[in-house]
Length: 114
Image (cartoon, rainbow, N blue to C red; front, side, top):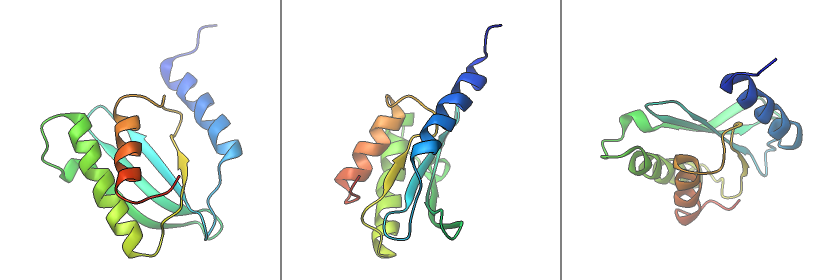
């Protein structure tokens, strides 16, 4: 039986989530990528609370990569304002390439440590 792309992504996500969990000192930076936008959250899994969230749908850049970088800068600024500087990166089952990598690099350049 051949698995669909969604099923393969779900398996990758389950593998990542088995190893990655956010704490109050080092929350989880979770990413979801759709065809049109990237949504990212900084989550404290111990409390089950989202600390900061951002979506690239509000960004007006030309390419998806530029929108992801702008969203990462906004997320990093909001997280640092709330006192979060260290996070654990959860790529959400997506391959670490393209817009996911651009988002991560921009978040690191904006001051988040992971």
